[in-house]
Image 1 (tube, one colour):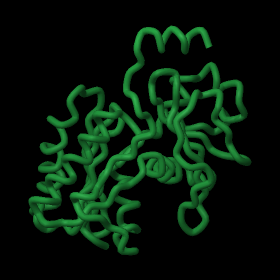
Image 2 (image 1 turned 120 degrees about the vertical axis):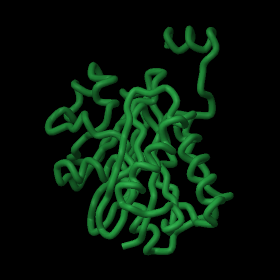
Image 3 (image 1 turned 90 degrees about the vertical axis):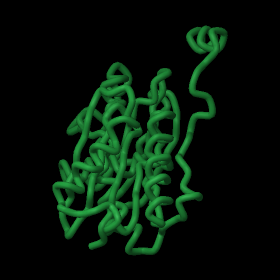
Image 4 (image 1 turned 180 degrees about the horizontal axis):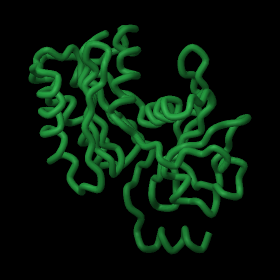
Length: 229
């Protein structure tokens, strides 16, 4: 197993994980307003627990989004900064796939519908299927909660279920749903191990966040038009 440092800050939960000698050491903080102030101290904590230096890492992975606009930029920026300084490659991991892995880790789900609150009455969502590895059934998308369409029987997960309970409770998704699954660096690290083994790495300068929303705010007139619609 490779030594991988992973960073995930695409939601209100910020986390760091170190995949080291077949184990994962992680830290997380929740409800903070400035993830950029908490990430590096958590990096230092996981390295200290492993008794190793950051220079011993082989790759830096990060949750690339979709998610909070500021959050995904933070994870990408920190990953790039560390990778540049250490001359290491980078592995971007799609946040929603990491959530699917989290759902599988929690309950063994093979067919997962991921729903992450995107604010503005919308969700980031995707559907994945596990068959000796993850297959993407529905590519990551941004839409109103009512526009989400699942293919077949799925286990739904993510805070979108709670944020838009009035919509999702009327769909056949509530059974066995995992509202508690959130993006986490532990799953980013787990998926990055597979990517690294397959040689799917990028140069730090080429690492990019995944944005599905071109705008992060609506004008007053746009909000009013949205409400009327």
